[in-house]
Length: 228
Image (cartoon, rainbow, N blue to C red; front, side, top):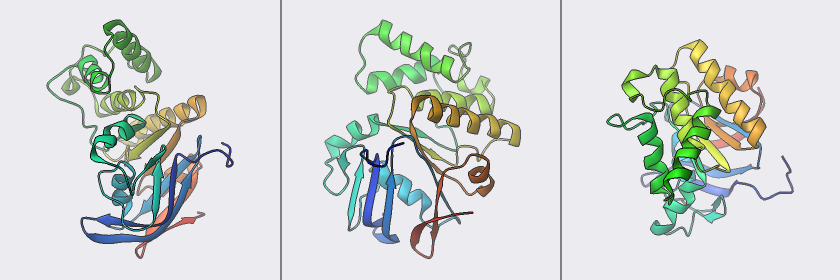
């Protein structure tokens, strides 16, 4: 992590919206390559709205926002898919396509992001499944997998395009304690080995002490860096 490098996320005095309402005023947040950053806070305090602003699902209020080189204040609809190719996103509820195999889930994403060569697609799928310890599960359907296995596949999907940044929204929220720990270890391994920045939305503060990173708390319509 070099703080003189270009941040993958930069918000300066930014208002974060939920619909037309401001839920976080004056956000200042810079995330640099290789960092782990947690956003903690109570339900309804703006965590998910920040997440959706980073992915350009929510428009930016006033202020400045840059993600992976894209200006959120000026981004056009046709540029949003290009931004999202630079991100990997992991959700609490996995969001796998239940009507197709693991391999077809991953192939769908690669084709949607411009991959055309069948052998290159197959090779990349093999690489990411190996990286998350799911190399024998390519032909399984999601319903044949445990929750932890589905989340590993979701992480494989997130790293398909070698993203600069992984966004994880309560990635362990639907998992038992032991499985949650495995998922956290996997995300931290990707961070260490690839230098991928990770921003994780969580209500579980114990994660922040077991896997140290910078911590921002949403509270009283603000989001400020804190220490636990």
